[in-house]
Image 1: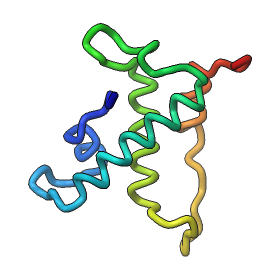
Image 2: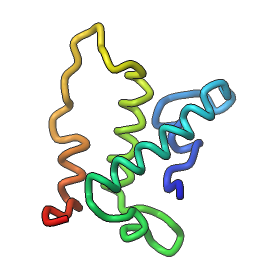
Image 3: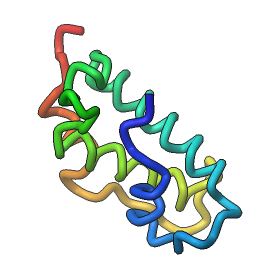
Image 4: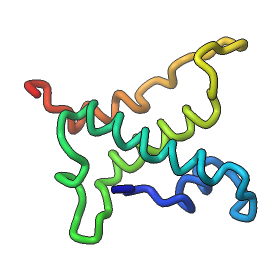
Length: 101
């Protein structure tokens, strides 16, 4: 189940709503980012969603960060020097990670 909508992802990516060429790609990235997040915390995201399917803010932001990273870096090799942004995805995920899972 997608907890991030296409519109939310496009807003985060600063992709104009009227630009539809990447819609399927972005939708796929949403699915992948949510799966990676679930695997990282060792729990299904539904455990952290309210009755309206809204995720807790930190998990929501972590998924958006992954989507942005995947969208900007489409290849496994970067030609420019890339660095991790301190206290980003891992910092957010650690708040929910099941260290025994």
